[in-house]
Amino acid sequence: MLQQAIFDKKNILITGGAGFLGSHLCDRLVKKNKVICLDNFSTGSERNIDHLLSNPNFVFINHDITKPINFEDFEELNQFKIKFQGIQEIYNLACPTSPKNFLENRINIILANSEGVKNTLDLAVKYKAKFMQFSSSVVYGARKKNNNKITENCLGEVNNLSKRSSYDEGKRFAETLVSNYSSIYGINAKIVRIFRTYGPRMKLDDNQMIPDIIRDAIDSKDITILGDEYFSTSFCYVSDCIDAVTKMMEGYYLGPLNIGSDVDVNITEFAQKVISLTNSKSKIIYADKDLFITPLCIPNISKAKEELNWMPIITLDKGIQMTIHDLQASKGLLGY
Image 1 (cartoon, rainbow, N blue to C red):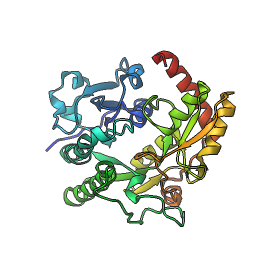
Image 2: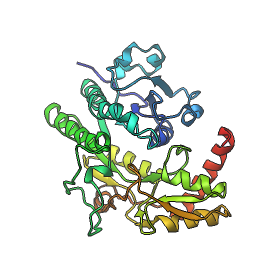
Image 3: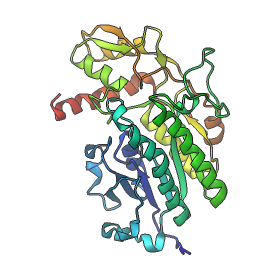
Image 4: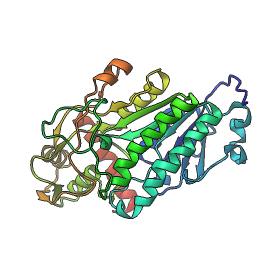
């Protein structure tokens, strides 16, 4: 049995750590811990973690989590003394989620939500680590006609044979794996259900709603909303999301827990804000709905307020401004 001593810093594994959310989580946790960031850049980006590579408390491992891994075999991790200390926390965010390449990624998504989750859970069992699965609002299915905010005890309704099923049903299956591992092996395994989150490092030219709106506004091109003038959703700024998940890992509540904004925002009004903030000459047009960009349920976050003493604090105007500044810089760096 692994004998774990008390060390000055925890060893933390973040799978999918080079992605949008994952890289922000790396930023937060490396301040007080030793972080192993695992990613294979299927949809993540090296740019998201470049600034961390010189940090002695950060190590990047290029690996596909759907394949088993033994961290004790990596010489670059010797400084983390994994053979003696093990791993204390695991955050699993690994799942290809590119809207632009969604259809060709479906098998990879299925494997990430099954084999990938199993492999990370096996590591949690091996090291007796606390575990957190990043699930999604998609487990609830499409927005209900009554438009009520969704609570965690809602079972949801998902078409397991649709073109989206690799992700939607995959996330539901992943939760089932986590629940059963927790029950059988007695590990501390938590589930968070992330609703639409935005902020710096979102990918340009990936058919993502917020970056596409901002990019087109900067270029004074027509802004296309995939739906009609009534399409609405909620937006949670990335730092608020990271606050919630780190608080949850520190506490006792296992979830599942809704993490997101409970404010329903009209997309046309959102686009108009972006146009104003960028002094753009863009016009708003409408097009047919997209497979991946659809109206999602709005979360009831009373459980997060109760269990974590958490609620989003970044206003939409402030969040949009910070995101615009980052994407303007990204456009310059990438030559868009």
